[in-house]
Image 1: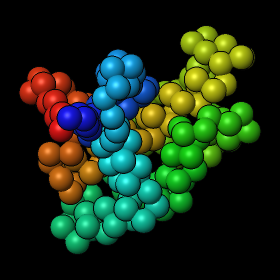
Image 2: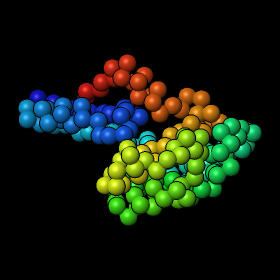
Image 3: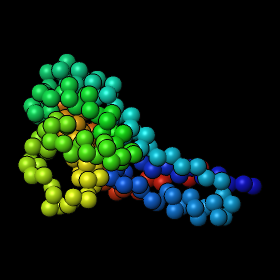
Image 4: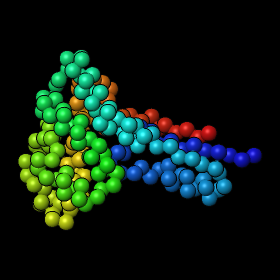
Length: 175
């Protein structure tokens, strides 16, 4: 009898880097001639939520509900909508030209997280750390949108809490 396994990475697990657990398990099982497939719900959900269309719908929902907390994000909502696809593409590809765009002080909106970043980060990242600097700024952008969703539309939408709760519950599914 042949055994099949589906390895699932839960939503919002370790968003800042690839989550290696399922890849290691897949490699081990493949070596034992177990047919495996991987499904990364973290990436699937993250890339579905952080799109121009979805973020536009989020702002419309917040307006319909009369919720406009986090005024810096609300006031710059058109910029967030216009730039979200660019930021997500950068986070996927990390291309140098896009990195220079993202780190330019006027390219992305300055919400409640970015406004606290009132220095150029040269000390932290140096002149050669443009990709990491852009990744940091892009992450702040995404976190600001996540905060806006949580505060104004869905109180259960928490990027960091979802990750911790799922890890605490030790979710494993093998078919």
